Image (cartoon, rainbow, N blue to C red; front, side):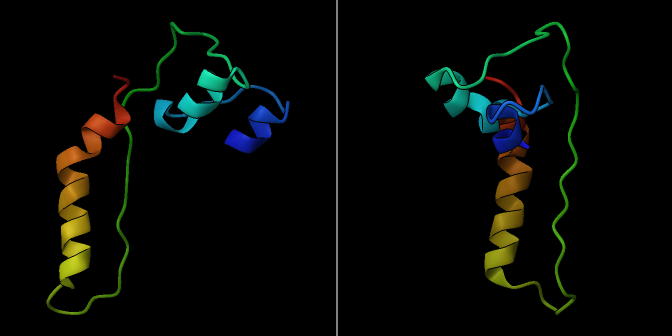
Length: 74
């Protein structure tokens, strides 16, 4: 979606962390700043081996710990 918007397809909702580079370069501009989409949902989908692989568990824990900060504009 980011590439389509930057190519001139129109406007659309993008999380700040996906738009920040294009906004900084001037390719995108924030419009309708009074409108904010609250909340976000993320899913980790994996096969059901027991126990959960250590790398996947570490990634899941990182998302649970830092996810809210990633989705909130600084």
